[in-house]
Length: 365
Image (cartoon, rainbow, N blue to C red; front, top):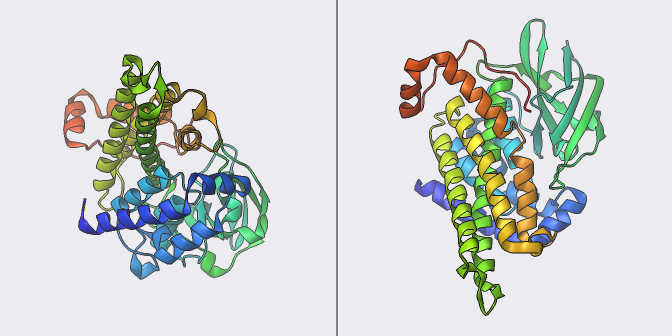
């Protein structure tokens, strides 16, 4: 890890430790927001890490953003860090559009969504938008006149229906009905800024959050089983519990390594093979490690106030957002099969796989 990234991680850890305690997470779940946390993150420039400074961002690269998100996942941080910088901020900066001062979200096209841009008139129905109602703007892609546009849609002009995921994080539905946009709210999308690229970034972001949460789950389980006494000795001494601890540690390390490789190889953008493998591995790890940690903890792991319960609900939510383990495994298999048998080993050994003429646009199921 570079020195700058180490400092970034250390500063972020201190901030989240102070402002994102388990009690803070519970309080944020009641309203879907922590203004105190978001203000502190904004003052530190964290939401716009990886967005170029010349575009109004904080600088850094994808690996820096993923390092920050890993810390955020560790603390179950209730904030749209990934959406503001790595996804939405990247798209706006690439299109030459101004970054909003407040939080930003992004829509990548859920089943049933519809977006229309006719001149300056914007109509859309976007569902499951992370922190959509709490964001100043929502970034969406719209086709018009045979051209693709990046749209910075003001949420103040939308009708918002609040929704939540399993972790009580906002996942809202927003509707714009023939809203007039100013000229600086949309611009042609440059090459490489499309739905597939946004999905890759979103999948990598969720994998990074999962990696951070799993690292904390491993720590919690080791601590609890070392303290919990049964038959006069810590339960960590029982062979069955030790098997759970090994499983959790293995899955946490696997997810962390996959995310690190994908983030470090993003020069400048994440690659399909890296992200598909990382999201599939992280999704599987989330399922296996969460199950093992709850078996080791027993009933206490399900309480709302205890960290494990907070982290597990996020693991179960994040593993399916921006494509599930099944989705990315299927797409990865399709790519490798299309490249042919002779390309299989070179793809595995070099981390490169030939790109198809068009990126997959299938369902995230």
